[in-house]
Image (cartoon, rainbow, N blue to C red):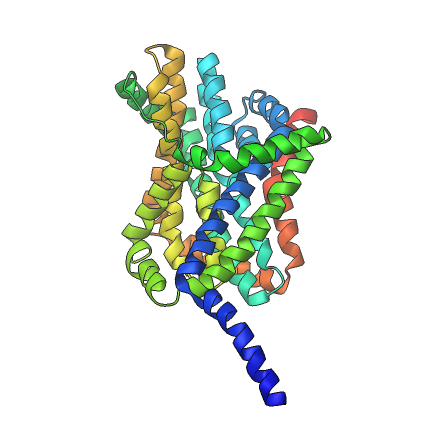
Amino acid sequence: MAEDRSSWRFKRSGPIQTILGNQGFNLFLFFLAVYFFIIGVKLMGSGFKLMGKDFSQELIASTSNPVVGLAIGIFATALVQSSSATTSMVVTMVLANPGFYPNAIPIVMGANIGTSVTNVIVSLSHIRNAESFRRAFSGALVHDFFNLLSVLLLFPIELLVRELTGKGILERVAYWAAGALLGKKGVEFELIDHLLRPLLEPITELISTIGMHEGVVTLIVGTAILFAALVLITRSARRAIEGRVQKVLDRYLFKNDATSFSFGLLLTTFVQSSSVTTSLVVPLVGGGILSIYQIYPYSLGANIGTTITALLAALATLTPCEGSKMALSISLVHLFFNMCGILIFYPLRKVPITLARWTAEYMSWHRKWAILFIIVVFFGIPGMVILMDRFIF
């Protein structure tokens, strides 16, 4: 009788195991989870914007000190979780006030650091398992350290050259390039918005009908969707990578640095958010599917991709006037800054990768410090700089 029950349980679980083990089905679940992951990121960004948009605009417009501008770029971007949002506000301000252009450059540099907060938040979904968290946290930090090292090197050089010659290197080159490009036509990529709209709009409308703390509710819903999607991404990816799918990842998308870089660039241009594309691979690193060396060039490509869409869109609307030229210039500063960082820290990639691995190793043994790390790096230090500028200097 016991044998019959065992056989019955085996037969009952057989079809379920077959479905769960099917690569096609798990691949479908993976892409479905990616879709909801992007929905979650968009909702989180909207929530932060609703809570802090006016505050961020006030911060951005209120400084002429380069160091404070850098801190504002980090803080404001971490607050709204979108470098695109910060740079868009900066471009608008430069368009209205061309004289703000030099002050906007440090803010754009800071935005590059602030946007990587999403990666670190995503890695927290692995915090219960030390080994998985170590991998995920290193995968998140490699992008952070690239951006941080680029700023630590290029920001002082820009300030020094500006002090000696009156204009910084990026300031001069971007202004010259804007003059050459002014009046050219660009293209806006809106396909991803059309794909998200059927689900994103009903969710936001439903939240707005609640009528209480819209920003907070949007943030909570977005966070819940994001972490649920992350769990599904990790589990479905592990099952889906066996066999053919794993070969696609290893042999094509992440075959070498060139393909990885191109994939990151194209995907970010399509999705219009480096926060989405770089944080998307964090659970794959945490699950041992990809390595930190494979995603490093992918992250560099994402850094370029995040600047292209806004640049092309700007080219479509610009007119030959000084404000438009300065607005295009600040968009080009973002592009050239990332390009310079890649030219320096791609050959020296062992530096950010080693720093990311060392930090992740330490945090895996002291996981509670990871949350403090986010608060201090992205909000605490920049916030202290801003407050000191407001009340002391």
